[in-house]
Each structure stands twice: as C-alpha cells, then as structure tokens.
Image (cartoon, rainbow, N blue to C red):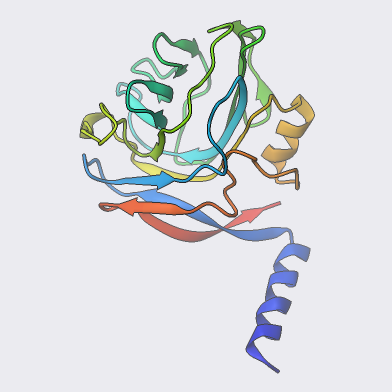
Length: 223
C-alpha cells in the first residue's frame, strides 16, 4: 500500500475517533526574544472582530502577560492581556476594557473576545461561557498594515520586547473574523465543531515566523 494512502487512512481514522492534529505554539521560558509572527489573510481594517484561541500557562497571576499583539508603525492597534490582578483585558489604540474571568492554568482554556464598533459592545467568552457586555471604543476603526505577534508586546513596530511581559506556556487554534460571531458559533468552536474558518487569521492555513526559543509542535485537538 502506498504511503500516501496509509497517511490518508490514518487521518480519516483520527477524525472518526474524534480528534484532529493541529499546530501548537510552545513558549518554554521567559525571554525578550521568543515570539511567533502570524500573517493575516487580508488587511486588518476592522470595525468588528471575533478573536479566539486556546491557552495554557502556569505563570503566576501577579504578572502582566501579553496574549496577542497587533501593532502598526504608530499604535498598538489591538493588544490582549492577562493583567496583574488576573483579569483579562484588551486595548484598541489606547485605553483598555477589563473582564474578571477564571484564571488560566496548565489545563487548556478556550477564550474568545468580540467587539463591534457600531455599538462598542465588547464581550469575553471563556470555555463557551459568555461574560457581561461592556461598551468600549464606539465608532473606532482598527487600522491596517501592522504586524501580528504572539508571545511578546512590541513597544514599537520593529520590536523592543520586555521579557517580564512575555507569554510562557502553550497557545493554539488562534483564529480571527472581521465580524462578531454568534454565541452558538463560539460555543461550537469551544467544543471543537467545524465552523467557517477565520477570514482574518486562519490557524489551519496560517504562515508562522518563529523566533527565539518558540516552537511549533503537533498536538491532538479532541472533538
């Protein structure tokens, strides 16, 4: 039997067994040099978005930790943070909105953030559970021509990272849409059901720029 046929049968068996193999990003230690760049599928001119990822970290709660950064030449257009008090926040070119959520741990959590410029409505989902809605940056537009960086917070367009804010742990399944997904679709994402892939960032087809000690490994995602 040809190797290609064997691999196809293995892949089909995995799907039938309730799992798929995906890429995962591992950041083993605190550094100012390790990060992974992701290439968006389209310019990030956004008046709404849904950003989702799976996160596991054993970093203590009393530490600022960057989870996602998108920066242009002039501004941090979109940053997602775990704050000193353990809350989750995101910032759009200045100012932040915070949510008190369950802490991250060594056990993987599924997190989504939604924002709609027309109303300013902002929410967080943790493992399929929706937070209260807050109003933030109504009428704002996220600007294009920036860089998406996972694992570090760039203080300027070219870098300048602070290791004390770096992410240490594992992330995967980072997807982004230019709209607010329905609550049921986000719950389907959490449970591993197939939904339309992100049209801004698509984890299955993403191109990675891996720097420092960051690693891309294969892992099983159970459905």
